[in-house]
Length: 245
View (cartoon, rainbow, N blue to C red):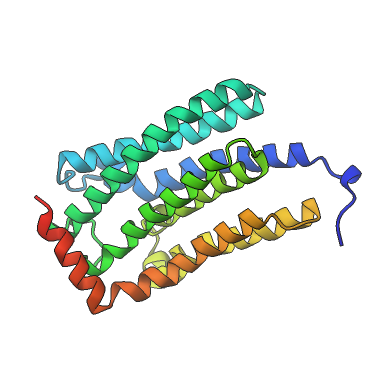
């Protein structure tokens, strides 16, 4: 049953939700990548293997800052600047996709000490490759719906969830390594389901775009894992790494 629209402030709910995400997202990234990137000097971990990895890390960090800035602009009701700034985000996203793709392929060809143990590098390549594919699809759809705030903001929310799995997988807790994909894919999937259900309940109707994008993101988790072990993927990954320097 739909809730009474007069009993809940939808705008305040969205603002609080995105403010919370703008806080939790960078903390998640920091916790996941502190040892191998942000605080690596303090932890004494191995140096980054290439300039490409430095560029990848810088671009991803810029994306986190970009998302926080966009949320702040909306909260401060500076919609015009938010839209103009969003155009810069397109260039940033394109750079992220290209560099992310190249970094993933290079890591599959020359595994670093931070690579997941026990997983063949060519098989694991499916995981970051799907991250880039899903990000391209979600962000591209968000730009397409940039003049429809209801769809745009939900798609942008999913881009954050899409990238969270990589950080969660690197949490410095033993149970994360023990649980494996069940945890670092399960948490983003569960969060997506909760947000979709909460969004539907609060608004009294299902946002079809949000539903389709959520299904695509959640479905990508088992698909990439099943694909990673196939001969077709191994042949494709071998072909990709054959072109890497």
